Image (cartoon, rainbow, N blue to C red):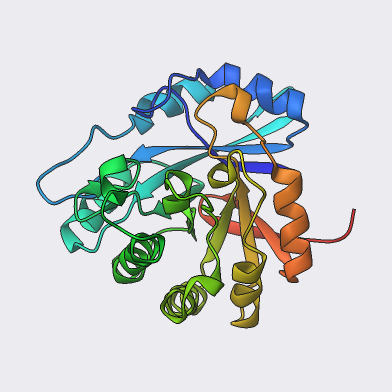
Length: 268
């Protein structure tokens, strides 16, 4: 089991210490982790303080690539936006770092953060979710340097609707948006992440979405809990693995210096 989406106090929205997260990984039986602290250049002219990747690297050096049997990788979560300036800011910022893995994620839509309740106030579920997917679709062409697309259902994590689940059955537009996104990802040799954080307090979802990804030629995935604190590390990754197995996706990937290694997904 891997957890390839973890945050520490190097991210502005986390206070978790590195060793705290590593101990949680050890307790959860995680074999490999990747720290993916935030790099948030997602609005022109408005830049959030990005993670100090150089300082994090220095802190991780003392572990020598492993902690009591847990392998350690260094990554980043890049906030994507449909503006070339934002993509170039991110690319330039991470260039000096020797990263293993890069997640590309959408967190805001034209400056409106989808974690803000105001984003949903006048929007139906269909409108809000389609706006999020449209932002992914419009952003991807400028982010060829990412390893995977992160949390395709992040908008559902904060949604106020009784049924927050993301599904292709919401509308033909939602289905078409996912198809375009996955074709773009697959055609550039990238993968997608199955992130368990959006499921909080609800049954898991996403089998239909994963099956679409596979039907279009998607071959690999990464798993992440998106843990900003140690109590969330590894959360529901067993459910994620079972979903990917049922969807028929053949591999999950680990990364070293941005080069993937593919591992078969098989019945345990």
